[in-house]
Image 1: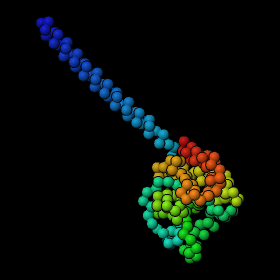
Image 2: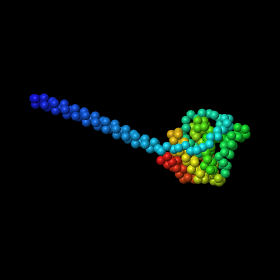
Image 3: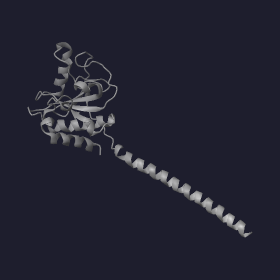
Image 4: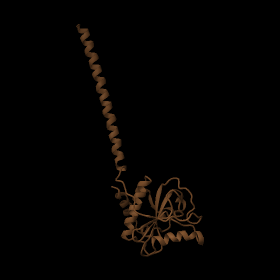
Length: 213
């Protein structure tokens, strides 16, 4: 074989090897990018939160507490307190139900967490509740019972509230940052204890975030 042909052959071989190496580098880069993307998604793929036990006691559809208006999209969860010390979850649920007859006001909540940690659902999460003023149209409302005038939740109520809120966050693809107080919407001191104790409120949101870790 002539010297010219050998040089040409070596040149072709070198170019072919260069293509192979380049292709390999591209493939490695693609794999790395996918791994990086997967790693970024991993924190979102958290431990599944099991639904808490709750009693479904839906209100009658009426214009004062369950208007039956569709809730198209959930952008947040709003925490409330009953402002009625020692009242139970069912007593508050029955108060909402009675508004269809008393016409005193328009009020309701999707869920009520009781003094024993029991949870009562009053309105489907596919409908709005009369709870959070301008945020009725895009939030789920949770009303909480309390024993004392300061509005502090006992441990059973608190634990159930954390569980319920974490489950709803998972269900609607929300984070603890999407959990707000009635106070954050209107300035009303509700839930009272979480308004007057900002550190307790931040701890609650942290507990919600940690629940599914």
